Image 1 (cartoon, rainbow, N blue to C red):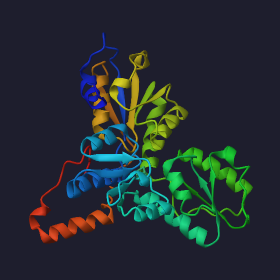
Image 2 (tube, helix red, strand yellow; image 1 turned 180 degrees about the vertical axis):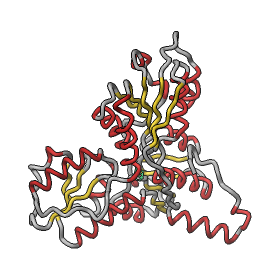
Image 3 (cartoon, protein in one colour; image 1 turned 90 degrees about the vertical axis):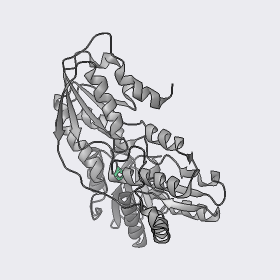
Image 4 (cartoon, rainbow, N blue to C red; image 1 turned 180 degrees about the horizontal axis):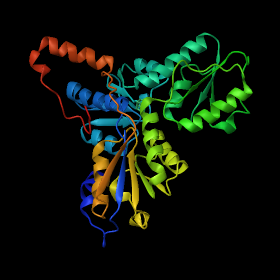
Length: 353
Ligand code: SF4
């Protein structure tokens, strides 16, 4: 049985005895953000527009279910551009790529669709501008994360990665009066600010970015978890282990008072033992998680007596991003030559808009 079948089957399987009654505090906002929506929509539209296969460099977003669903529709995920056959279409993931990846794609005669989240692109622009102004850039982020690799690639000679407060002491810059910090978009707000505080002690003239680099979706999901965590005997975060913002939600939940917290991709990964003695279960999901997976967890919990569900909302979100320009250009051209092509094209897996 594959994961998609397990997702469908899991909530229907009742435990030997109900563990409730208990209540669920459902975080809002949660799940699917505007950047993820745009990236997943881009792959779906590309499949419709050009047909399979559509190659995608890296996971389009860090979520197993989304990747499996797109694979079933004809997307082929690769690690590097060189794995894509010459002349094919390749989509770059929401986490962004270094400029060198665009060069590789052009060299391979690939048609690239750049689904980098516009909020990651904003950080790339900041990095480019500050490097051109000859700053040393201290990038607060996690070593090895795809977004960090892409951002460092914008100005590899100028950017120094600072992975947590413990990394501050070893940073070397050319001129301590010309230093700026930027950050990965999906960090824990508290942890990032602690690192920046240490950087400011070491570099008193440190310049801050013109606006927040930690994105609205990351901040809002953490704020909702901070609100409900003190009441949660157990916090369940729906998300994949390689999803930075999902992992941060577990950490924030524990830091703000949840007695226990676990990350799961699917409802059937929840261990009934976690529910023993848990009267209040907090529930949220990372920014790359479609709501169907949260619904699966709610059904799983309801089958165990957790039928009282209260939403804890700390913000409203209305952010939307337009499709990548390469796709908009081709969709416009097709619509101009064939008015019937304006017909609504749905069928994007898990899409929220
Ligand atoms: Fe963009 Fe933030 Fe969503 Fe990442 S989590 S895709 S930066 S909106």
